[in-house]
Length: 129
Length: 231
Image (cartoon, rainbow over all chains, first blue to last red; front, side, top):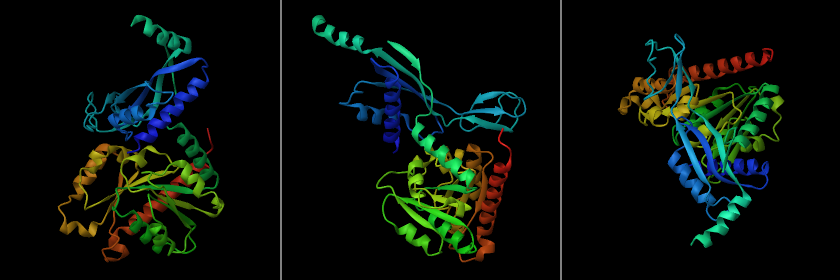
């Protein structure tokens, strides 16, 4: 159960990105996680929510792109998604294939809005009510 | 609302320290391995037998991680090599900063090999680069043959699988060939050695010789990559 630490590292990354963009706040962070990274997406979502609750990041959404490992055939060069660790190249049937991805644990994007936008949304809310 | 691309690894800070460690290991020509397995697969026992068999002049040191206690370090110190316990206090894996901290007062120039025994856990340690040259996974014959499929991450990232407790094979339903085939489904290039540390069958039949040969050959490979020009 190291998803708490991973979630914390994601927040550190977001905080760093926001420092570079003064006057903005984060709305959603996108991450890419490979099926071989050893990170459970549900546990990560849970940890992320728990960590952001009642903090400056409250409400920050996380978008987890959970990706299957990919292989490449050494004989014909075809790249393919690995299912059930099936090593056979779907194009030429060769068994000489190599894993090229699957352990990603990286940032994809950050959705931000101007702090004024956020404030005005909050100010507008009571008027609409 | 505005979407901006974000790059870099999530475990950026760990990756940064691990890269620094790797550079220091390269400069000092220290071959570092990271031993990972479930609790109770026999990491400490394998290390005891390894240290016992090594000539006293071998320049090897061990870092051993656990949530609590100095028990493993006490076991391993008996062989006269530098050993340090990393007590994580509940953290389920070692990270690069812990390694950096615990080797701080060791002179790497006096070492040829650094063996890191990770916290017993097949999941979390696989996410944390420690700057090692190779990860090694242990699987004991009292576990399930399908563990490589259940915990693919660590088998994917390890160069060598050490099948331990093979002296128990006659007494358990474990099929070694199936376990090896499963490991190679996840990682086709996986090397495998079978060892029995407590079987009393002597070093020649225990597989320990094969394990130690792998370690030394892999260290030579590591050294040969260092002497190649950087390009």
